[in-house]
Length: 405
View 1 (cartoon, rainbow, N blue to C red):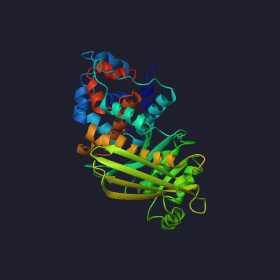
View 2 (view 1 turned 90 degrees about the horizontal axis):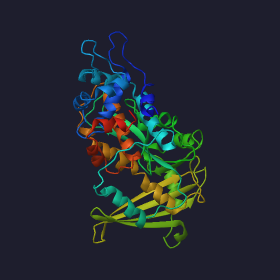
View 3 (view 1 turned 120 degrees about the vertical axis):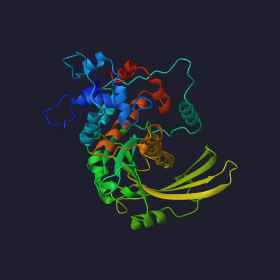
View 4 (view 1 turned 90 degrees about the vertical axis):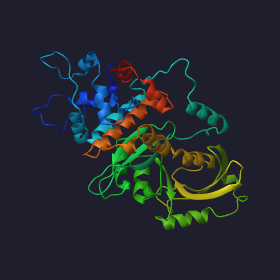
């Protein structure tokens, strides 16, 4: 079977002039992603990528269609300058569509799942053990809809004429798979790219969780109308009338609202958390497509159980009480952190994204797309610890085999 990823990368438009063109675009892209500087530990910059790519086996370069030196008869890897020039000029939207489209094909079963084996005697990854423990202590409520979190992240160290590069992504709650990504145009808010981000994605019937910045009537109508999905939106001062109405519906003592509440407790990472959510029904008069409002209170303290801080958040959802009770809304609200823990934090820590010195053209955004692809690959291969998985890919043949190349 031909590599699904390779087929998709062949569809990315080549921005270079035909005159003087030596290296096919797909060769550069596949070497960028598989050197992946991204899949393999230690290759987080263009210099590392090119150095890894320079040692690609000749048979792999031949299968990719690399340029062949007529004098030596050997296949040639592009120079570091070529890598940088291509990264800076390739259409970011087309690249994101190709890389995220590959992940979607794996999820739907239209492409084989990547395999990244670990040593037989290697212990269970700590993250996998924690996930199993949490599943036992905090079982997932039955009947949860597929959900995705939408949020933005600046690329620190990057510069445009008006500020930093800012990217908005959609990430699944369950496995933190990145479904899509868009760059926010200069001097515009991240809510301006929501329609472009979600339009190519198959989100019918899904629940989309967004923070207060995206709580607009336009976004609510887009999600419940054209996209045929559901939303969970946070209410703050940018929607004062809706917030006041929600507070009025949710007023009362805990004793009077017992049947509309859910409580969970967590202990770990040096703290304890007590979360309480209360829910009330509403309708379109409060917000387009609205069916329920909620108030989520989070009390945090030390391991001694003494509460030292309190946070209260109000929100609104477009699903009815029959579709989601308080325990479901509590799970959805907590699941929204998949975009922070599974994407933003991981790209910063595992791939040192904020330390990158790339600033030219579309290079920062495109390298972020390859990092997203690497994260999707590891998670679709059921590897919970990204750092461990990257260190397991020492052999170049194993690395290319991940994508069937």
